[in-house]
Length: 478
Image 1 (cartoon, rainbow, N blue to C red):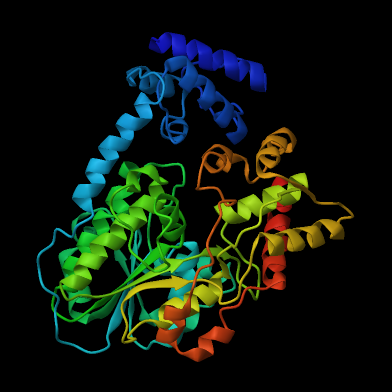
Image 2 (image 1 turned 180 degrees about the vertical axis):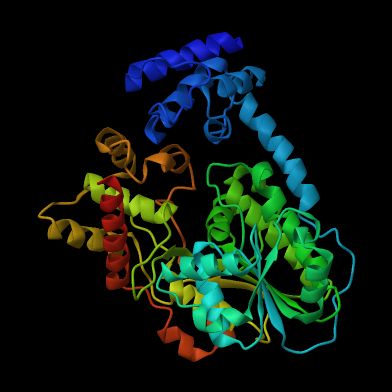
């Protein structure tokens, strides 16, 4: 189809769905009223009409009708599964090349405990990690940030943490903001900043990542994979440094989908990674690079982090989180899937405590970070029922397929879970996927038996998070 034909189709659909007038090529899809539910429906129609594979992220990358139409017109027409298979073959070749560490330098050997270099300090988990580093260690913390690194930038970071009831102010003098980004050479750091970190840091805590559950591997690789090369190179400079990498338990879940014999804390084989969700694939490839780093003598701890809920003490939570959006969406429509499986879940403050406690420990390799006690879909169902009962409402359980079908019918355009429907209903990226119970025995061995009583998931922690998030959504809507 030609660009003007695709434009006309998009204009007609938007006019029918949202009733807006004066829509044209320059109109922004979302400003005129397109919802995430409409994206799902329109994507399916466009794929059928154009005979090609379209990434859901295209709607956000090209947000105007004209820009989206121009992009779609360039896609090759591929009938049936050909488009998907062609894309997978390209990604498989890319993964095979990038799964091995390219940097050949050897690790620095000299130096004792020093400062910490933290990426992702402005993110949800990052704020809690920064708070714990300041609490558990005594040195400076270099925080990689975009933009202002002066007093105003520090003030904003402290204020942002305060919104999660975290008080960084007493330790603000130990926080050093450095300007840079994950995907650039040497993290985009200036020569003086790079040298300071190389000479003083004894730990590189890689928490930052591009998290997009709709994106493919090749859209995430520069931030999530190539940054590993940069970190290993930094670990080779001036003084000895350990690398602590924040991965995800989704790697194990997806790994078992392509290799059912996989046992717990094992690295995935590079073969088949192109078939799994892009974000999990990027983390799996990063893990393989770090496995090579260990073989080259680097000190590396890879921490597979489970689904995180809000702070167990306050309930404060990241807005728009996939897992919490799923639970909040179920609360809104009064539906929950009749699926029995384990869920790897933990309050964010406990996850941060455990991860930071690994700094300086004499252990390396893969570690699962989750609750030490079993927590499953049945437990989630119990919590949601209790919260619905507080409103005098019931919670209906349906088989998985019927759940998704009924959810689409009941969900409002503003339902928190709507944006994930296409991606999650289609495959093992679904929160309903059969998840194995995650063993944390290796982590507890490294941290000591006292942590076994801390890494506990309970009903009240989840209730607190859901109540806080629901009140925030209600306030935003009003």
